Image 1 (spheres, rainbow, N blue to C red):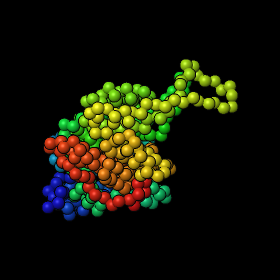
Image 2 (image 1 turned 90 degrees about the vertical axis):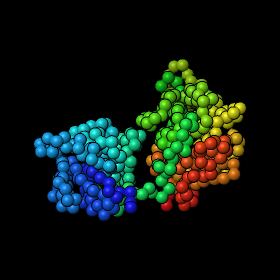
Image 3 (image 1 turned 60 degrees about the vertical axis):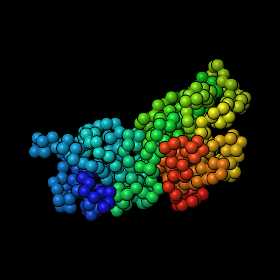
Image 4 (image 1 turned 90 degrees about the horizontal axis):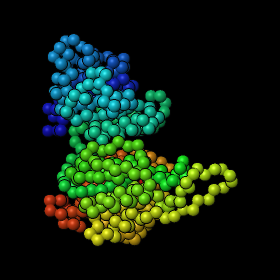
Length: 428
């Protein structure tokens, strides 16, 4: 029997153009054994008639929070309790904003707030809307609360644009719901780091030039935050030391905000004695200027900054007596494996996660690929969403930590699901 067999699914349909695919999705969910009730937003009813969904589902369609007959029995609460799964396809940018802000202005968003069932979105929108910082911030907020996104897919769009934003095809949505995707570690992470204390650093640092200017880098912090969230999924007690980023704190994570390399080093070293695993995903500034006390005026055509080297936090931690299992990150523009292996050996790390950076690679992107190295082995993962990549990284860290430390109750060996090898930084 499939995972959808005898499951009660509330299918939410919003007013995206991809709503024309949703009746087919109803039938495919039913073919997989699910019972489906459809809830439409007012905008969705202008795209596809409610009678179409009633015909294919065999049940009345709900669209109005103020339906006197249904709400006499608190229909929105009844549906919220009835559902084993709430699936919204298509999920528009506006719907994602409403869910992220906790709005309950219509029947569908009210059900999402009232249900204890998993909520899954199949986003669909113009490629520029999907890439917009507001949409991505809403996505991260929702994922931090346990909402799952399937897609979007890339390709040609109704508006004529090409790029990410197409709703994943109904057959593929059902396949993703019916069984974990190849290599999916969401369930497999459970208890792999139960009770283990993990300290993560993430994001950039800002080094002041004067009271109004600073030197920094392009790190968004997305990878480090995803790693912290994945460690929580694995059962770890996670502390996150974060540089200046605008990202929501993952659920279950204790967060400490810092700004400069000195502050990040101090905050991390203050807590390192309590960590079993340290994951240094932050992009700490290698050099910092001696800041001027007052704003530097434009008196000359050139400005020369005298930079001094910042403390090497990663090497300092790895060299400590009784050091935690230490995982570094390496972002390189060339000779990825060579430079990463030099860093692994030179700093005496237990493991290093290396990724290629450059145009459309690494920084500010929602996808990445990595090469993971340790003293006598390696693992590579092809380009995928950073939240999924983080789970693979944590699974590999958990396996190596158990093998090295011989921790009772933790699985040793490489438990990360095998994916096709590829050159990090490329996509298939």
